[in-house]
Structure formats: structure tokens, C-alpha cells
Amino acid sequence: MVATSSRPWLSKYAPGVPAEIPSPTQPVYGGLEQAARLYRKRPAVEFMGRRTTYAELIDQVSRAAEVLRAHGVGKGSIIAIALPNCPQHVVAFYAAMRLGAIVAEHNPTYGAVQFAHQLKDCGATHLIAWDKALESVAGAMRAEPTVAAKMEVAFSVDLTAALPASKRFALRLPLPRARALREDMTVVGANPALPGVRVTSWEKAVKRARRLDPWVPGASIDDIALLQYTGGTTGVPKGAILSHRNLVANATQSVCWVAGLRPGDETFYAVLPFFHAFGMNLCLVAPQLVGATIVVFPKFSVDMVLAAHKHTPATLFPGVPPMFDRLERAASERGASLQGIRHAICGAMAVTPAVAERWEAATGGLLVGGYGLTEASPIVGGNPTTELRRPDCIGLPFPSTEARIVDPADPSRDLPEGEAGELLVRGPQVFSGYWNDPVETAAVLTPDGWLRTGDLVVMEPDGFLRLVDRIKEIIVTGGFNVYPSQIEKELALMPEILDVAVVGMPSGDLGERVVAAVVLAPGAKLELEQVVEWGRQRLARYAVPRELFVVQDLPRSQIGKALRRIVRTQILEGSTVQAAPAKSPGLPLASAP
View 1 (tube, rainbow, N blue to C red):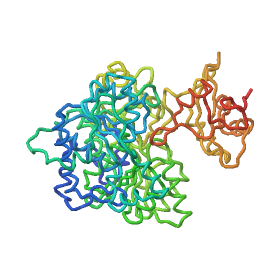
View 2 (view 1 turned 30 degrees about the vertical axis):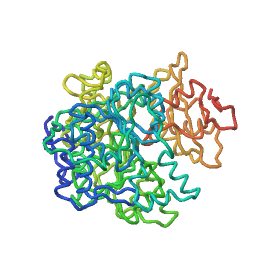
View 3 (view 1 turned 90 degrees about the vertical axis):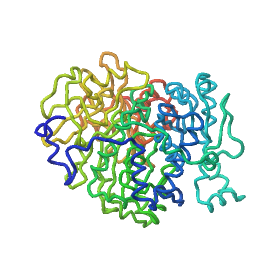
View 4 (view 1 turned 45 degrees about the vertical axis):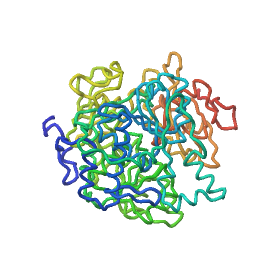
């Protein structure tokens, strides 16, 4: 590690946050095992009103591990999990961790094409999937026969099996609302068949299984635990290889970072998907380290969150800015309380000061932003959970984390303080590379372990990091570098604009031209001339948008981050089908001279 004198950010840490975390000694499953010893009777998981204690959870995990072992899973086996957030997801994940298997997480709402790529790439031999995802998986297997040829068995998961008995009964009532909700949660009727692969009910298999023999060997700290697919902003998704050490280290960094956590007395809300690295860390791995209750939501729903907060109030809420904005607005309109949420951790994008101020007034707690990427398990750092937090910055590097600002063209050359450069990080949470992709690995990971984040940042004198933009998304126009996030920040202040994404489009000798895709506020109208006039008062002339698209919505990642790459592709291909009906779909409403 670098010397303390070269880490100015340490002085801004919240009281009690260490400069270094202890080196992890136990694999991921060890956290659950310890929590079950210390907090046996405490609820570990709550789902739609049904609670599972730590004693019950570890029993289910043991039986699930025996199911997997009996079907040939052992150390190093690859298990694909394609589930929404649900108790079965928690059990399946920790059962795989207990056996030393490698979990490959997949978005259960993927279509056949996405499943085909990822299942072929990871080479999974076992699958645990939401029954509603099986049709897409079947399509993937037909498209890629090697996927089915390698798959030994698939387990089908029925979300309704995790509901309280009263709610399961209600779903079977001959009422339109009950029928619609049931169809939203599970397949009504027979499960789709997978070509050449036997499909077994996960719930039935776990229920009738015996407990795993405690002498069955498990994982070691440096074994691979997870293949987390990433690359949504750079191209074809790649499997980031994350070890037990990576996951435990980052979860430890996370719980150390949040000042005042009370072991055995915290409630984490799991609205972020477990199949995303952010949700995996803060909603699945970290809670076990402090014996927290995880309130699990199959998807983000304002109604479900507000209802849950009445009877099982959250104390820590990880999320993304739109979630906090919508929850606070709904709570205010309905007279509902958000009090008691002491810590809200925001990721994926910057939260505006206005949203943070409203949230903190409504909860009495703090809303702080963090920064990370999947390759760092995923959190690199964040704002301190004190009054020193700075909404204009992405925060401070985590304990045991080194940071450098370098010349993007020559990462061996460090840049002076205050100059924008590429952020490089090194620490126990940094991955070892991409699965089956040494070329991409070499492009982002230096031989001495520094991860090239691809983000352009400035380090302030006190160690706070301020994001300028992603290097690969910088727009170069007429020889000038234009940063999309800076333009988006200014355009978002226009009362007519509800949401915005700025991209660069090919423009001959100029290189690229600046293009804005906007979602209008209800009832608003907007012309390019208005945007140009607004921009000229706030931006450099070369940064003012030259074209304007009005769209109904912006494509976003699973945690709500606007995907500029997809916006750009849609414009290039003329496939912006969500263009406003006032003009021809897919065509710009106007162009600036």
C-alpha cells in the first residue's frame, strides 16, 4: 500500500473508519455461518411479509448445497443463476458458495440472444432459473447447441413458493387481479422444456433433501466465487472474475465505511438486483457481516417499499437516484413516513443536491454517493457518511485502496494535483481479469495490479475525487474534448427537460457533433433553438448540442444508468422508435447551424 502521507483522503474519513481493513481469511460462506451462530433467531430474510431466521436460512442453504452436490456440483463447478431478488436466490447463492462452486449471475429478463452469449461464455453445467426465464433459456439453447450439450441439469424456481401461505392462497382465487399477479410471478401451467436438459423443481428438491455433510470441503479464500458480467457501456458483456477474497474484502470495506452500523440490529432493503455487482455487494454479501435483516423485493416498486417500511423499517437503503426521488415524492404526496432510514447509499450516477436534500429531510438520515465498477467488486470509494460529504464529488477511496491519476495515453505517468486524468485503483477488491478474455484483461489491468477504470477524474487537494467523464464517452469535436456529463448536468436544469443523454455523432472534419436525446416533462414542448440559447449561456460554444431528439424514454441499465452507447446506436441506425410523434420517428427534430 502507498504511504499514509500520499493518501490525503484519510483525514476526511468518518470517525472510526480504518485506513486498512483486515485481510480476509474466510470465504463468502463464512459470513453467513458466523451470522447464524451469533443471531440464530434474528430474521435473515423477509420477502413479501414472510420471514426466515438465520437458523432457518442456514438450514435451507445446507439442504440446497446437498441438492447441488447430489447433482454433481463440487469445487470449481460453474452454476448459472438467473433469478430476480427472492429468498431462493439467497439460498442458491450461498449453497454454491458453501461447495466452492463458481456462480455466474445472469439477468432473468434477458432474451435468448443475451442468454446464449453468456451461457456459452461461462460454460455452466448447472442452471437455477426463474421459471419465467426458461423460455428464453430454451431459445438460447436452440441458438447455441453447445450450451445444452454442456448443461447437466436445470432447476426451475417458482417465486410464489416463497410467499406467506395466505398470499399463496390469495393468488389462486378466481379474481382477475390475483390471476394477473400470479402470472407476473410464475409460469401458470407446465414449465417450458429445455432441449436435452432435465428441468427439476428447485423448491421440491430442497424441501426433501437432507443436510449437507459438514465434512464436505468448501472454498478457499482465493478461489473464484463469481463471474459477474459487465461491459454494457463498452460492448459485448464480459465475465469479471471475482474471488472470495475480492467479495469479502469489498463487503468488509462497505460495512466499515458506514459509520455507526449496529451488528444484529440493522435492516437492509434489497431493491437493487442481486445479479448486479452493486446489489450483490450491499444487499447479499455485506448484510451477513453485520447480521442484518435483508428485506427482499423482486423488483423496485414504490408501493411495495412504502408498505414494507411501515412494518419493517429500513435502516440502510442502497439505490440509485431515481429510486430516492420517486420514493420521497410518493411519501410526501401520501403522507407516508420514511423516518428511520439512517443511511442511503447511492450509486451508478450522481444524485442531485435537491434530491439529496429532500431525502434527508424526509428520513432524518444521510444520502451519500459512491463510486465503483464491476471489476472492483464493485465499490472503489464513496463520500463519507458525515457532514463532510460532497455531492459534487464521487468521494474518497475506500480503506486499503490506492488511487492514482494518470495520463490516459501513458498510464505510467502520474499527473499533478488538480489535472484531469484517468483514475487507476488497486486494492483487495480488484478483480483478476475477464473470463476467457486475456486481451481485454491486459487492456484494463496492469502487470502490477492497477485497474484502469476508464474514467476521467480530478483529485482535489483533500483527496476527494471529482468525476469528469468516461474516457471512452468523451466527444471530440473540432479538436476540443467535450464531456457529456457536464452538458447533461446543464440541460437537466431546463424546466422542459425531465431526462437527458448526450452523445457524439460522426461529423466529417469536425470529428463528432454533440447530440442531445431528451425526455420532456409532462406537457412541455422544446425546440433546438431553446436548447442552443440555454447552452450558450452555460457551456463553451463547441459543447452546445447541434441536434436534438425528443424521445419517450432513455435506455438504461438494470440499476438505472442511462446507456449512452445504446442511444448513439439507435440514432445511427435510425431506430429511435420512441421519438416524439410530432416529427418523423428516428429523425432529429432540428439541427443547429
